[in-house]
Each structure stands twice: as C-alpha cells, then as structure tokens.
Image (cartoon, rainbow, N blue to C red; front, side, top):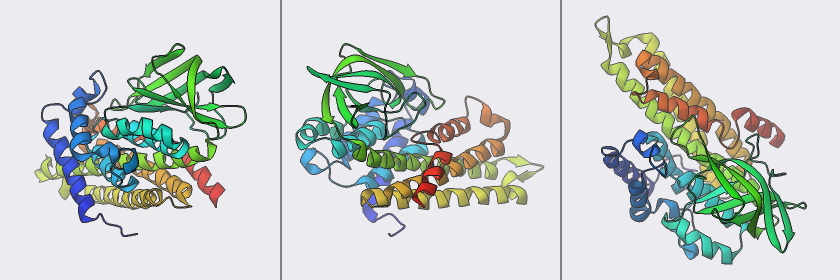
Length: 366
C-alpha cells in the first residue's frame, strides 16, 4: 500500500473541505444538529449532487460512481474534522454495504440508486439492548407465516429517526436475516435516542409483528463484513476529529500568552503537543491501512478493522482530553468547540465496538 493519497483523492478531500467551510458560515454544527433532520439538508444535497459522496462505494450498475470504500473513507475523514452531521456513515456506508453484501441484484437495483443519490436515507437496525452489533444472534425475531413479520427491539440505529428505508437484522431461528421494513407500517415505532454527541442521530426501533420483506435469510456471513466495514468507517471520523482538535490546540498555544510568553514556548507543553501529533499520525496510518483492506476486500479485513478501531479510539480519546486540558477552563463551556470534539471522541469509541472488545477479537485472530 502507498501511504499517501493520490492526486484525485487529494482533490476529493479538498472539494469536501471547501464545501463544508463555505456552508459553515451560515449553518454551523450546532444549528445543523438541532434541525428537524439532524443535519444540514442543503449541504448534504450539495455533497451528494456535486461530489456524489454517497455514491462513491456503490457500483455503477446500481446508480453509483463505482469508486470504492477508500474514497468514502477520505470524505468521512474530512467530515470528521469539521464534525459535520450527515447521513453518510449510517446510510451511505452501513446500510448501503449491508444491501450490497446480503441482498440480491433485484433488491440492489431497487434500493441502492436512491441511497447513492442521497435522496433516500436508509438505516440499519441491528444493535441489541446492550448496544452490541452481533453476528450470532439478534433481539429481533423473524416469523414466517403468510409472509415475514418481525418482533423485537433494536438500539443505536444510526440515522434511524428520519430514515426513509428501514433495514432490520433479525433472527430467523436458523440464521440471521436481513429484512426491509416500511418505517410507516403498523407495528413499527421509532424513538429518538439522545446521544452525548449531538451530531449523531440515533433511534431505538421497536417492532411488533411488523410486516417485512426478506432481503436475505442467511446473512450472518455478510454481516461480519458489514460490521468490519462500518468499524473502519468510524475510524475515519476519529482520525479527522483528532487532527482538527490537535490543529486547534496548537493554534491556541501559539496565540495565548502567559507570563509574557506564548504558551507554546514552554517546553512541557511542546512535549504534550508532540505526543498529540504522534497519536494522530499513527492513528491515520492504522485507519488508512484498514480502509485499504476494506476497499480490496482483504481476507484480514476483520483483524485490520479491530486493530484500527482499538488504536484510533485510544488516540482520539487522548487527543480530545489534551485539547480540553490545554485550552483551560474555556474548553468546557458550551460556546467553545473543544467539548464537541471530546464528546465525539467518547461517542465514536462505542460505535461498532469499544476498544476492549476489539482487543478481544484481535486475540481471537491471533
């Protein structure tokens, strides 16, 4: 692997960064997160129509751009740096990859074009009551009589509150299946779940004999890959957030003066900033390596995903904590953005498995 972005990938990152910076002048992170959909719909429409961010990893035959997961990773890193709320992770990555991995061609042709265009938001209801994305069991039960019906509850559904398409992982008794459920159907209840990170839109989905369409009744193997891909995608948000938090901290240390000198001139603070740089750069290397494995569908993808998630989680937590410490008292106020990065670090630490869970998986691989 070449540990540097290609010219085209650099241009992609710059285009996303430029759009987000221009839009932030009129709609900031807090305003976007507080909106009805939980994100800036105009910005999302522009990212989808002009850059095609949701279409990057979708094959051309299903309305996508036919690039790959690494290009999507590049976009997520930029969105992570700016803390931009968007449905790219939940809809453009998790839901879209679940459809690609488990559904047949006819269902892919029906569901993916709208997701790739960004006009349809899809959500995957998967995590159990303890917040675990399991591939051996589910809290939702699927029953087949005159068609399939689902009963049970899924938690931590990314983009669940306003999703247009609802996908559900359910236990058929013989295996795990992937089902499509109409969010407006009888027996479907979606309850928004407040998150420590206000930029994440989460929901609890409860099903009571809800009618469903089976996309796959044997999806356990496909879900293993989906979980790994989703895990890697989260590390992109973590690396982007860590880089931005470090950049803001270094800028502050250069500007803020104490005892007639910039804070950054004190050797002890230089050492702490250097430790932040090491954390960010090593995390990026781990994240890119895992993203490359996902793009190439490497046999060791699951191991790479766990290595990256464990490392990037610790790195982002450390950098976010230092950001708060080195900014002083102002960093814990609502008006300052340091607390937003701190909350993002702790929220993403739990998404698709905490660091200790991934270390356990690493040991299992070894």
